[in-house]
Length: 243
Image 1 (tube, rainbow, N blue to C red):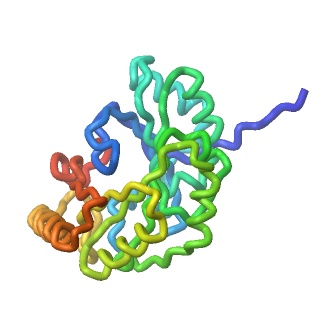
Image 2: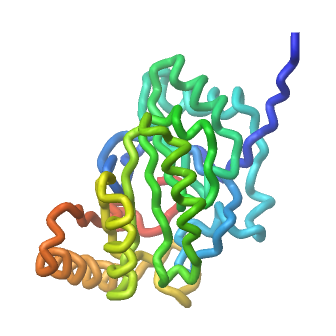
């Protein structure tokens, strides 16, 4: 018999149940497993505590079993949606966790920028692909992104979620949607504008102005397949962690 070692998963925080605050699952009660580490450094990142190495001392390397015990405790043993987020959760070995949860009736959604493909994407229930627009100061590798789509093998529900700050980001979003016309598109106004210091404070007035502009732009452009949504959790709690 071959003994398979659990490689461990870097975890920034586990919390919930609370509502999913954005995208296609907005409003759905969810337990969040936020992993630590990311291969991107977006200029407006609103989750630096799960990205930047200066927060590394806060992350824990946990076994699949330990993570599952915490998820089970938080949910009271009742199946709920589990959101795998980050950072970039695709850089962590999450396949065994998904398999474990499915055996007990839980569902799994994962959000990634589409830079790292994993075979276990096909085991997810929802795969949210969120390529980063020009305002992030990151460059999308569309070959790597396509590998993520192919890895899912049409098994989970796949959607595009794009952050939009300005006209340039909007053009990028339209281009991304044109590349994948089969995928539902969710747009959201940007939250954290650089060089504002990272933390819980948000420019709520700026968010609402960008939301209004984005709605008007989509409507005038007759882009009727796109859904425009706010980050509900930001409207309620700002960038507070653990909600």
